[in-house]
Image (cartoon, rainbow, N blue to C red; front, top):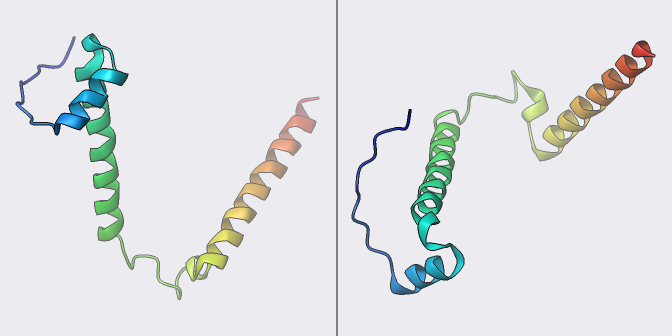
Length: 94
């Protein structure tokens, strides 16, 4: 079942409308604009969520998030642990 739709009259700058027509075929332009809008809205929602969560991870409680280098080391360690776990599982299956 498809979702109900609503017509929105949107004004585009002429240059943008020309580019859209040039790069996206006529029957697919609405889908393209919808997909681009969904992606942009997702980024906005994620940015808002990040702002709302700012300060949740304090250095006292989460020293691994103290600074960029600490975060990089933490991510590196997570990846290494995952690689080692995968290697172990692969050996166990043989």
